[in-house]
Length: 544
Image 1 (cartoon, rainbow, N blue to C red):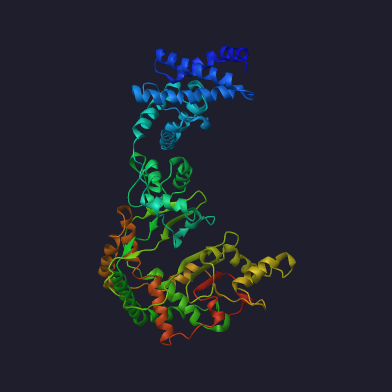
Image 2 (cartoon, rainbow, N blue to C red; image 1 turned 90 degrees about the horizontal axis):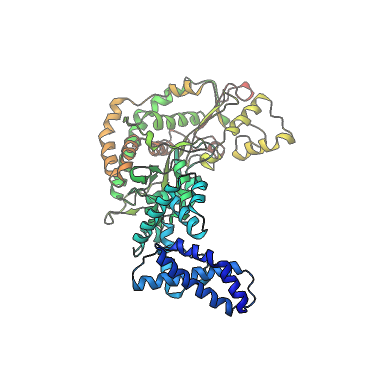
């Protein structure tokens, strides 16, 4: 570039360069030194340059580049007397000796709060005046200045800190499965929120020790900017709960990191003994009570299906050991209408490695109690428990209220077998609720579910007390493996859950093995532990 053009450009940009220098310096003398240095560099560069396309961008890149060198020089000679916290925008003009410091600075900016990070970014990167930032944020200019000063202090303190990556940053957890106890709302169950691995690890990071956003980020080896929105989302839906000092905890139940196999198997042995006791003393009471239930439809006529379902319901709902405890704090309330206790299954390590297993038992997995009630048809209600004794698939997600509404319409003759209803028929047959010959294939009771369940006897308090001390002992020992905020839940569930779906399954094993009930056919497995309640039965007939 010729000297005349360069002189003209220097004159044109001098005021802007001086304003830039004033903004970056803490004194007028310092601003003049910086301005002189920048003007010199710009002038020399202009004389050497040829064919500049974006003159303004070119000049500003040199300004930032010169400023970075000036900061480095000042730091070596006098310590940083100017701002010293410049966030470079034109990365191609970094000096190599400042590259590490710039990376460190960027990292520390990412650890500022969201508000301060926005202010710093706007002020340094975007060169917006304080008045503009204040207007945009809807806060006074003095507040913006206060945040800037605080940010500078935090950034300076952050320099030289060794940011440690926590355990989850090096080895994040992976869920084996998810569950919930309660109403998932619009299918917004635990897996919808924690199926995302980052969400899962954010929540788990505060499980044993409450943390703020910065501490969560450090534990995960990330910067807050990447997880703030997720933290807000998880808090909004109840998976994170704010405590003191803007820290978070969670009431999601994660499986413990360690477990005692001996304690677990001793509990199972006790539950087997309880199942044997119930087979002798409780089952006859339930079977006797079911003799009074007459208005019922049972595909194939095997009344044992109804008795088995009633026994299962009774064990799960009427034999539990009572313990009074308010568990409302554990209920997660999502924006989608969900209200439930959430739990996550993890791989746990056996603590007592010297103990060798003495039991070979089948799966005691159960999904339930599932109830489905219809607003469209108030007479429609269903209860079910999915276990290895049933052939239904998909658990709670595949157990839809519309299944029972479609079947009710079929019973009333309002579900014509035509193209318009083809999907409804296909759904009912997919679930096995209708056979290929359009025969109803699930148990149905004519009347109120409340009246039916009321007939099922409750285990006497005397019998429950036989197991209460053992239940409490197991629960307290189990709670030791969980963080303090979870122990009320673990103990309460442990006491109530000693006699639970696991015992109900053990009891079914006894009854089917000793011949009390005959083995289920594949067709009967469709409706095993599933009853639909309605004011109308198939063909208006009883089927025994």
